[in-house]
Image 1: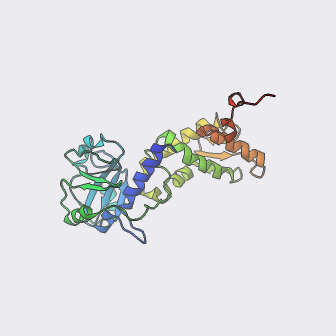
Image 2: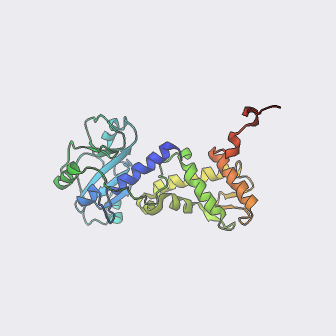
Image 3: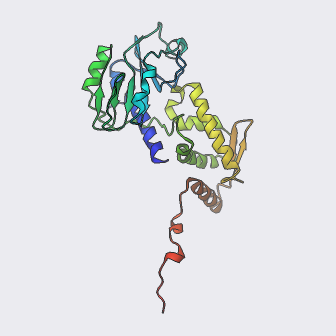
Length: 284
């Protein structure tokens, strides 16, 4: 996975950790009572913030960013509200929650200069929390004293997110394709790849965002079946499924398939780094 892909997934893991707990640590939102969340859900205003967080009485909005410029855009969420379907049917609240305050920009950008109009949480060490407007006093208290995570964030088995680019999806998909090759030429639904990429957070993302990820995966599989993995990968566009035709018990077949995957990833085998034309040989 390109550096940007690894960085994006880590930012998402850290952001989600803020709403959850492990046996050794709890995130600040979780500590303040925000124990439920919904990712990339459509709001009443037809907007899609990265995370809606919920306590028993309130909701907050979090938008994740790896850019120094994102703070200029987050103002669009100032009046954003979750739909009744989200807070009632998905989260299970008995009544409409109140807004906690301005939206949160969660970033891993160190030294970000904060603009007006949002609350800032910088999750990369050194942690920086800047609260501009927050009506929930308990949440404000917890966040202002938070010094960052004391333990490594859980993986959630999260390998990619719906907003991951095609290029960022390649490396995690390569691992899944190798797994698929060991399944004995069975047809595998594309949605299974979505489940493996989103891990334990599969049901935390909206159906629409899962669908966007599924479409990107389908495009990749379709392209691979006609290029790098021609003769190995069969893609059924109508059934949204694929299979790998490979003699898994044959070492040469496994090696050839692996080389094709590495070629797709642009990973060169060790011997390719040694070009005979660039090696000086002693002459008698």
